[in-house]
Amino acid sequence: EPEVTQTPSHQVTQMGQEVILRCVPISNHLYFYWYRQILGQKVEFLVSFYNNEISEKSEIFDDQFSVERPDGSNFTLKIRSTKLEDSAMYFCASMRRGPNTEAFFGQGTRLTVV
Amino acid sequence: AQKVTQAQTEISVVEKEDVTLDCVYETRDTTYYLFWYKQPPSGELVFLIRRNSFDEQNEISGRYSWNFQKSTSSFNFTITASQVVDSAVYFCALSEETSGSRLTFGEGTQLTVNP
Image 1 (cartoon, rainbow over the protein chains, first blue to last red):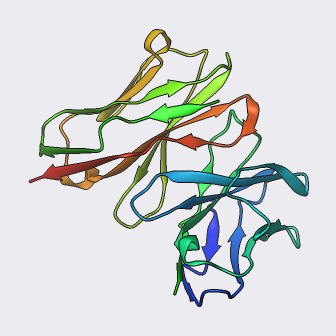
Image 2 (image 1 turned 30 degrees about the horizontal axis):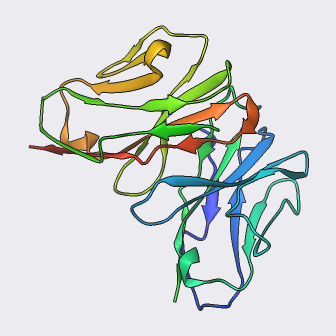
């Protein structure tokens, strides 16, 4: 069964460093997303990406964050100058079409900023 | 603005008991979609069900059933004859046709099934 793949599964970084979280969405999907879950809290939307551009972003997704689809398969989330409060689980998701389809989530990347 | 409320933070039951997880949503759209996801201790998000706003039929899948009532803006989830493996955090989520395809999640309900 096709699945969304995220790497790494766990990343530890020092405050102020840049990190890139990687995702390989399901190949025939058109919509891509990043969500964040701070430990013990709910899952929060960060950004959606369609047709090679950001289609929507939340207030959390400030200038510190950027997304890219550098080739036909990878979808990356870059966090510049990480802060302690960026520590969270980051989930990538993809949808085949749009709201009427299921969002498939990756296993998540646990980011720890020290 | 869309909002999902899961008022039950934690529920603890004994194996074989039935348990219902509540979900109440708010939306101004007439077309919207409701979801339930399971998050086991390993952390991944597992899709359970999707419902659109035009389909109020209740659904049963094995020990799982869902009760969608537009009149009360609720989409409740029942596990029959619970098992220890059902222990997880369960999230209800909503997406609106006019707000793009992003999911708004509730706070989640931690279900613990004791042997």
